[in-house]
Length: 400
Ligand SMILES: [Fe+2]
Ligand SMILES: [Fe+2]
Image 1 (cartoon, rainbow, N blue to C red):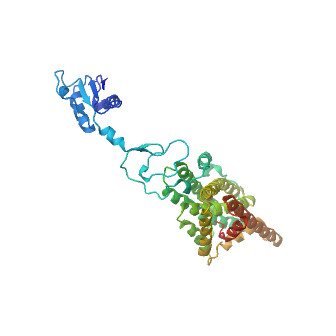
Image 2: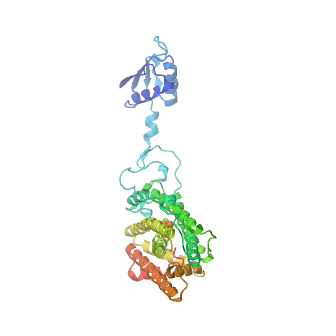
């Protein structure tokens, strides 16, 4: 098979090799390409380029009476064919990811033709069912569309006008929220670092989740400091509870404990603080965080339910993760008592005994709603009602 290409005055040092390459592409190994052109060093440059790329010049054109400008005949080598001989596609670009992501695909784009021999990726999660949920692409799109700017989404200049004692309660709650948000940021970031990038939508979703938590840390810190500081307290029991989440090694149990049980419970907590917010800033920051948290919970619930439909025995693994965490936290106080008291005072609105009774009852109702929410999500995942109630009761007193 023969072909020709004309470089006109273009030299190989000016991009002429692109035309040569393009003309060689359809030829089989051994095929001949005649290159014509007027560049004075065309023959010399082509000879060097061919050596580098595994082609050779036809013997009768190695020197020519026509001079160094050509024409020159190239015989296509086998290097190109050999290079892609063992290449394979990294799954298919369109539609859901493959069931199993090959570590040898490394960082290649999903659907790319992967040259053999690159470094394998050291990802821990390479099985689709262990990380996937069908809702992940839609949740990522929703997350990308709903990123808000902390500088403008909250009216930071609104007048606070909050009685000092109530403001201290808000500051204590913000202090508590920040430490929980920090755990909620680190966990998706850690899961992300061990996820095979073939599961692109999950990777993207976890990245937006971490970005959401970064904003929550910011706005809660800012509200906490808005009245001049200092921040409130951090209890050893609360931090111990969060520490167990950080140590959870498995993708699904970490996602289950954090997002289904912890962030699920936080939906009610944030709604409660929002409803009883004594100032517009507190109302804004909790409303904005609540919106993001709903997505985090949706992924946790959908992923866990997805895995259970493919492997019913996973309910046992989830159950054990709750029991293990409960046992680990058995000797800790769980919730910071100052957080609990702050919730009561926030709902009471004053130190009047009748108001405190109302606040107390409101917090009891909140705990009841949190329990109901957890049971509902556990039942959705596939736990029978009695087991859902049992597991909900074992959930950490720290809420997260
Ligand atoms: Fe958050
Ligand atoms: Fe979250």
